[in-house]
Amino acid sequence: MSQAQPSSKPTLTKAQAFALKKLTIMGYLEGTSFLLLLGIAMPLKYMLNMPEMVGYVGPVHGVLFIAYIVVLFITAHKIKMPLWALPAGVLGSFLPFGPFVFDHVLKKRLGQ
Image 1 (cartoon, rainbow, N blue to C red):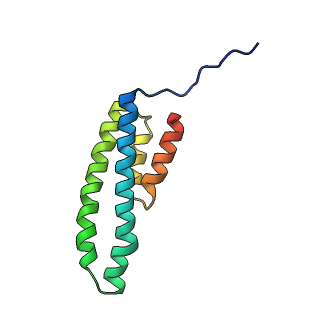
Image 2: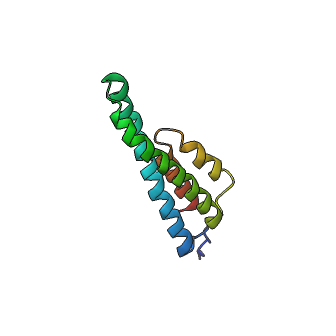
Image 3: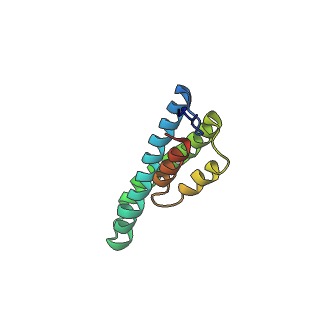
């Protein structure tokens, strides 16, 4: 007879799952704004001498970056993230596609 093995991955409460969802949304917004800045606004500025787009996308990305870092710290506290997760989330915010990769790895490790 086989018995059900308990899962080694912790289950999140509803409040923790909601905090993780907010982190995911903020990470996607921040990551997308960074890609827009690097992939569209900066080439327009330096290749076509059109700096206006950086003037719009840059400040929006700055606000989203700060918001992402704040939400990351709050979520780390709420869901008791593993020790590696907080520095990895901060580092990921400086890399193109970083927030997307961080979100995927974190959810995989948390069993979500």
